[in-house]
Image 1 (tube, rainbow, N blue to C red):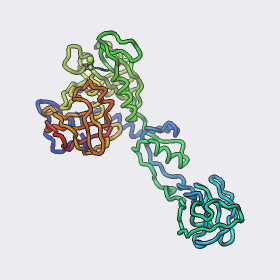
Image 2: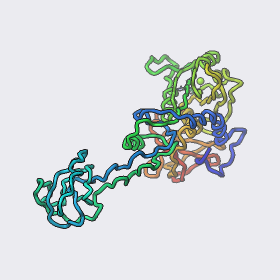
Image 3: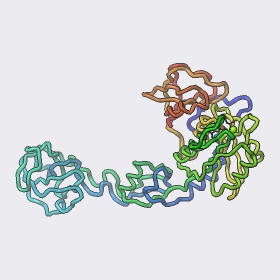
Image 4: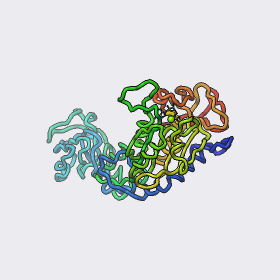
Length: 411
Ligand code: AMP
Ligand code: MG
């Protein structure tokens, strides 16, 4: 692992691959595909840019604010005229420049001005209307008494937010609401973003039934498919297909052979020690099955599979939903969307962690304290849904006591 791991953490024991080594293997596997995404930019219209990763720097084509304007509803004044009595000239409304561009009035003038309206060139300050005597807008030609106002008071100067020609967003930035607002404020409509990694998600298991169908005895609804699709899209990937496959090795190979135009296949289930491990049985050869010193998420598969459009990287995550999501968070998400924000927090209650393994627990973070949600069981979806962070108990830490400081990823 990258910045999240403990540099001095003991290595994993008993032939297991360490979390760091597996993360590096996944990174190597996906390197060519991710490098292509870094190179190839596509242009999307602004409303479709949310969640995408910027491919090129954005240079401001104009100043923000584009003109000096008022930060208050008040009177635009010459600070040198104040304090004292001034005469109201034409009112300046937001979006209407005529009054601001009108010829300069004589001395001791004040223009009623609304928030966001253009400041006339002759004015250098704004007095809020409530500070005036009387505390209201007077008619043009009437007098009003205003207090002292230093130059620049309540003026939003042109270019004080952004200066034209400067780089306002760097490549690699994920575009959220704030970045989209900045692009919109700059009048930009075509956004150069990285091509998204195209992913196919395959859930495996004879027990799986799709939500919405009736649930026969012994079966469960497929939660991994929707979960990983959501997690991948949240990390900026494009999920082209989400499918469930029965525990038939031939069926799995046939489903892969039908896949077209994806950069990565992610499966869940069928990679551990049972008698019907469909991914193990169906993909022997090009795919490696390893035991990672991680709990949950120990069994992992990675390699290459042949689909209709060629050979593409393959990642096999374990079937238990929490194991699957922890695998995604540890090995795939950092490559797509960078590291999660990581903080140190005080553990409420004690936690035990298996020897030689990096344990990831689910937690709720409040005011620097983290409470574990649910036990270590990797089927505990309700607790996962209550959690807002992942608690890391690295190799070498077999017990964290109540009050211990632990590393937490905010998810
Ligand atoms: P497996 O790794 O295939 O042995 O599955 C481990 C556990 O995860 C079993 O209890 C499965 O029923 C469960 N599981 C596997 N796939 C899914 C899925 N797509 N949604 C929910 N649970 C699953
Ligand atoms: Mg299974």
